[in-house]
Every structure is written in C-alpha cells, then in structure tokens.
Amino acid sequence: MFNAGRLSLARARRGLTAKALAEKAGVGVDTITRLEKGRNTPEADTVERLAKALGYPTSFFAGDDVEGVDIEAVSFRSFSKMTARERDAAIAAGSLGLLLNEWVEARFGLPNPDLLDLSHESDPEVAAVQLRQHWGLGQQPIGNLLALLETKGIRLFSLSENTASVNAFSFWRGGKPFIFLNNFKSAESSRFDAAHELGHLVMHKHGDPKGDRSLEREANYFASAFLMPFDDVLARVPRFVSTDVVLKSKVRYRVSAMGLAYRLHQLNRLSDWQYKSMCIDLSRRGYRSGEPDGIERETSVVWRKLLTLLWQEKVTREDIAKELGIPIDELEGLIWSLTASFERTVPVPGNALRIV
Ligand SMILES: [Zn+2]
Image (cartoon, rainbow, N blue to C red; front, side, top):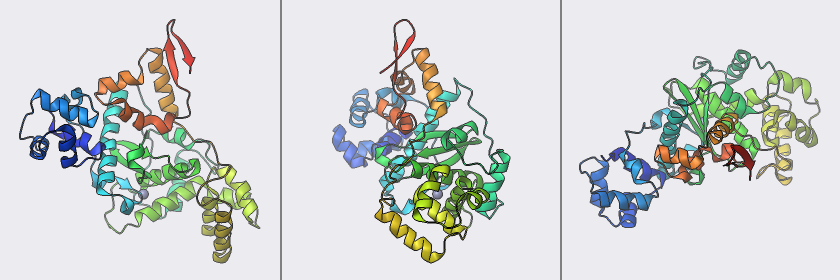
C-alpha cells in the first residue's frame, strides 16, 4: 500500500520541488507527479529511493491518510514574508503535529480545552479582560505562559529551522486548539507570539470573514493587553516613564522592552514624541535586535511530563518516531524548542533515570 498524500507531505516538509526530489531519488519527474496524484502504485524499489532521498522511513508511505491543515483555517504572522515553499513546509509540520498529537492522546489524558469564543468581541482589550476573568487570573502578570496555555488545553508544538520565517501559527482541529511556535527570536518575543496566537484562537475562531487583514493588529493588541493588563500597568509603572523605568518594569510582565514601551504608548502613558525617542534609545541599547538581560526561555510542562513518563517505560524519542513512521529529526523538530532546556534523560538498567 502506498499513500500518495504522504509523499506530498514529506516532500513539502523537505522543501523540495517535484523536480528536485526526482533528481535526488533518480526517478522521473512524471513518476513523482503520477504518484502524488495517486495514479500509479510504485515498485518497492521506487519507494525505497524516495524514502532515502527524503530521509523518511519507507513505513511512513504505507500509513493512513494524514490530516491536512487547511491554509484558510491557519493564521500566520508575517504571511507576506513567506515563500510558498516555506508556507507548505510549515503547513506540513502542522500535519505531522496532528499525527503526533493523535499518538499522545491515545496514551495520555491531556487537559480539555477551556477557551472562550470571543469572535463577537471587536475590542481586543475587552477580549483579553474577559479571558483573564474566565481563567481567574485577575490583573496579575503571567509567569509561565506556555504552561498556562497547556493547562487550558492548547496543544503546543515547535517549528523547526526550515520554517524560520514563520513566527507562529495556530488553528482549531476537532474542537482542540493548536499552536506551533518558533523560537529563533528572544524568549520575550516567543511569549508575545504565543499570546498573539491565543488572540487568534479566541477572537478569530471563524477565520477572517472581512478579509481585511485587521486580524493581525487585533491579535497583537490582544497579546499586549493579555500580558500587560491595563489596571496593573497603570498602577505599577511609575508615572514618569524613563527608559530605565521600562527596563525595570518589563521584568514584571516578562515582555520585551519595546513591547512594554508600545503598551505604555497605547495606554497614553507615553506621548507620540516620548514613545518615538524611547524607541530610538532602546534601539541604541540593543533592544531592537535582541533582549539584553532577557528572561529564560519558557518550556512546555506537558511535554516534560510526557517524556519523563515515557522514559520510565523505556520509551525513547526514537521509539516514538518509529511508531509514527517519521524520521527522528521531524519528531525533534516538533518538540525541540519546547523541551530544549530540559536535560536529556536516558534510562539506564535498574529502572533509574540518569541525566546526561
Ligand atoms: Zn497572527
């Protein structure tokens, strides 16, 4: 049995054109085209060549249909910066994430989604307050945002290097919310990206009916308001805002200095002129290109628990990849930035866990 959709998916993940794959595998382009259209059934030798060229196990191509991610239903940031190939690779990562999620959910009970549908709410500031109220967060700053999202039932995955121009994306599938996150920027920026995607999940569940791309602005506004509640900011940040005040206060909200300056401008604590000169000052101090003295990168609590439990049963990442029929680099790609700061635990004889 050969699954045509899986060939397209693996090719998209590897960012290869049909021609490039054909050359790499030593087969004709028309062979690839026919196989992907499901018109031909390949010889075992052809499957092996394709698998080798793609770095995928042959077993991958024999599996059931993989759920596709509908591009219309996916919210991307920096959509315009992406090439079609990068976009396809990211969407294909979404499909692999669904595959991995299915594997996990067949073995573990993950938290049920507890989000609000705020698609009727046109003011992101109000939407952020409503979600905070629903989650009983009050006006407190949020410690580990990723852990919070996971306890509210959001399935988190990471994006790997062939999707570097995608910050993050999110979608609903089967009543479950998914967020895919990149981590090539600062930890503060990744946190903001996660909050931005949360905004899409609650405010734009039904897509973009107006098609006017105001959704990005709304999601950014939501993220600002969610991470920096106006009551708390107005009460805690000194009235006279200098650059040093911003640098000191950003620690409370675990946001970037630029992000807090933006919020203070939004809340009229900084005039247009003050905001502009603060951005110049922050840039000069290196806060545009990075986040000096930044926070530690947030990691996933769910993945840490799952991997620990699996290790205890002597199930390695390699085993999971094998069961899913995907290469280990694809599995690592889906979880690496969420687990990168854990030390790798390796089971040793005697059922003990060792840290290496
Ligand atoms: Zn967005």
